[in-house]
Every structure is written in C-alpha cells, then in structure tokens.
Image (cartoon, rainbow, N blue to C red):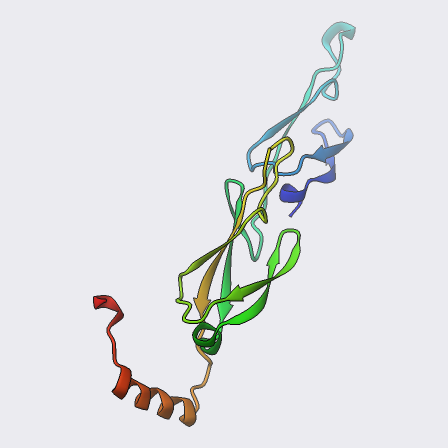
Length: 162
C-alpha cells in the first residue's frame, strides 16, 4: 500500500546514518531513488556523494499489481452469481459497491476505472481488475442438492460445447 499511495520511511545507511525518505506514490519494485548529497563524505573534503536507495515492495495479502492496474480476486456465492448482487469490494483507496450482474461466471473480470495505481506525475490512474471466483458452500444441504438434480433434468447444458 505504501508503494501505491506513497509513504515517508526512515532508512539506515550502511555507515550508520539515518535518512527520512519520501517514497513517491506509484513507485515500482526495484526502482532506485537518488538522494542528492546524502551519501558518504567526499574524498579530501569534497562534497558528499548521493545516497542510492533501492525500493523493495513486499507482496500484499489481497492485491496484486500489474503495471498501474491492481488485480483482485472476489469470492462470491453461487446464489450471488445466479441472482446478481451488490457487494463491497476493497480497493487501494477504500471499499466500493460493485453490482454483480445475474448469471455471472467464475473468471469473469470487472474493471473499476481509475481505482488502480496513480503514479506521481501520471495523467491518469490505472484500473482495478476484479476477477470473479464462485465459491461453493462447505456443505451442500439436501434441499439444494434436490433442487439442482431436478433443475439438471430440465435444463441440462454442456458449457464446453456452446
């Protein structure tokens, strides 16, 4: 989240000095920040060199980043997939309401425009791509099993041969 939104971090240099570093919003993993004049003292009384700080971005437990887009897997129930629903979805800026249309399939991707990474100086933000993942209940009760067996008799289809 700090790489997406930007942050202020305290960095300890190899020779023991401490610097406060402004991490810019939208910074990428592996980016090197140059802090002019904050490095080691120059030779023979010359000016201090630059400190080079390489950014290492830790993985987030919910989001993945692809360029300026944020990827998120949204687990939904079978009834939400069939009937549609309004569901709160986390984004890097906070939660938003998303309408799940009727007959939504697992793997379907919804685009939340502008809800991705907005790097400093960029004209527009990336998007958040929400991938639907239908999750079955832990236990299928007799009523649901009976309903589905009756439904299958009247409405059988093979999604592999549309």
